Length: 107
Image (cartoon, rainbow, N blue to C red; front, top):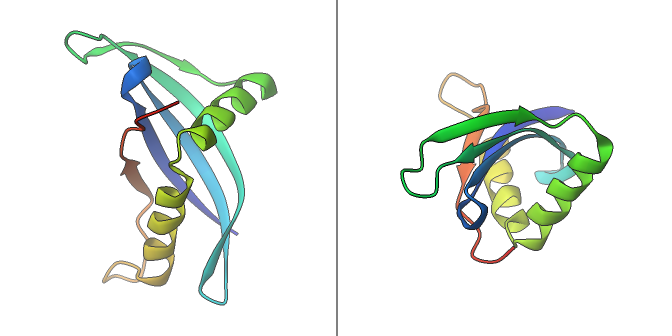
C-alpha cells in the first residue's frame, strides 16, 4: 500500500484541507483504499492569510470533510494525479509525496 499527502483548497469556504490518501497500484490502475483528512487551515477571506489551523481528530469530522470533498467533483482529479505519480515516478525512482488540487466550483 502507498500513501500520498495532498491538499484541497476550498475557496468557497476559505479553507485548505490536508489529507492522506492510501492507495494501491494494481495492473497500472490506482485503487484508493482510504482518504483521511488530517487538518484544516482557515484563511482570511480578504487577504487569504492563515487565520488558524485545526487537526481533524474525530471520525465524524473526517466523514464530513470526505463527503464534502467527494461532492465537489475533485475525485477524478485526485485519481488522475495518483495515476501519473504512481506510473511515472521522479527521475530518482521515488514518487512525489504531495500535490495540490484545484479549488472546487461547487460544494
